[in-house]
Image (cartoon, rainbow, N blue to C red; front, side, top):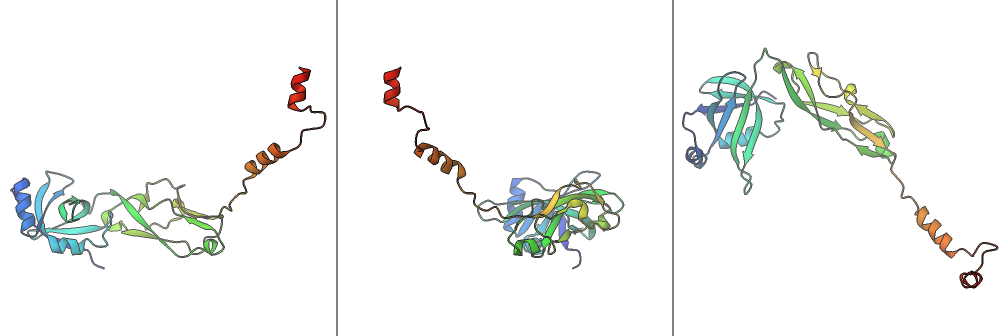
Length: 216
C-alpha cells in the first residue's frame, strides 16, 4: 500500500465563521505544524480525507499536498462533532526526512495461543510502544505472533523484532502478551469453617452459660 496523500489548499482567513463556511462547502479546516516556523492553515476535501484516513494509525506518515508542495506529516488529532461524528478540524505534524523522531507504534496481536486452547486465559496489557528513528524507518505497526504461547509464558517488549535503525524507547521489561492459568472458583472455606465452629458441641469440661452464671 502506497503512502496516502491528501490534497490541501493554503488559506489566510481564520476564525469560527470561516470554518463554518468551509464545512458547508464540503471542506475541513486544518493546520499543519512544522518542526520550524509558524503553523500553516489549510483546508481539505472532506470526503477525500474521511476515505483516506481509514486504517491510518498515529505512526502512519501521510503526505499533505499544499498547492503542489508535498509535506510528510502525521495526523496528530481529529476533532469530531459529538452529535454526528463528522470531522470538524484536523491537526497535522510535519516530519523531516533527515531528523530523528519519536513516535508510538501500534502492536497487532496475531494467532490463537496454545495455552488458551489448553484452558488458559490470554492477557494483552500493552497496545503500543515508543520508538525513535528516521521517518523512513518508522513502521506503521508491529505484528506480534502469539500462536506458540503456552500457559505461564509471556512475550515482553524486548522480544519484539524492530527494524534496523529503530531504537526502542519504551521499557523493555513490559509485558505484551501472557497466558495464565484459569482460576477455578475457590470453595468458600472460610464460610464453611465458621459454620462448623458455630454448630460444634461445647468442648469437654465447658459449662453451659446458665450454669456458669450461677457459679459466678
